[in-house]
Length: 130
Image (cartoon, rainbow, N blue to C red; front, side, top):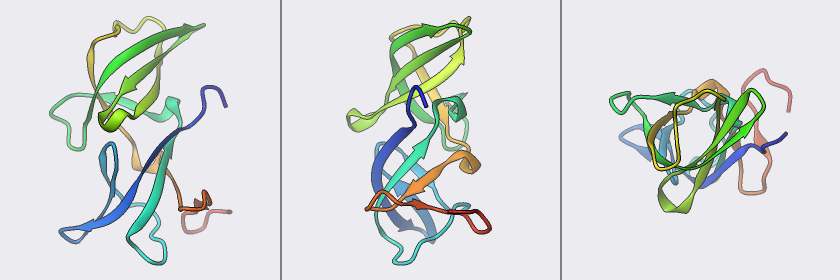
């Protein structure tokens, strides 16, 4: 697709009994498929159209700064800088008031996340075809 899926490199770790993705952002993995071996290298993927804008007080909100706004027809794509030099593309309506330099907070809906192992193979959910 265009723009391509956001891919964030990181690690799967246990923290206080919960599985987490730790990378440019820390995200709960408890609702996502476990993989044999547990801790280890992991890439988290999400499409720009599935990233949601939220507020600072929302649980799990990921802060970022809008580096670029690119208008494409009825949509605009935001390049949002996260920590550690990572950038996430986010699709919003073309009439969005967001501008370069704005602070935003992102939500990554768990049912929209894709996980990839160290070899780049997608980790499928139970009942899902690989």
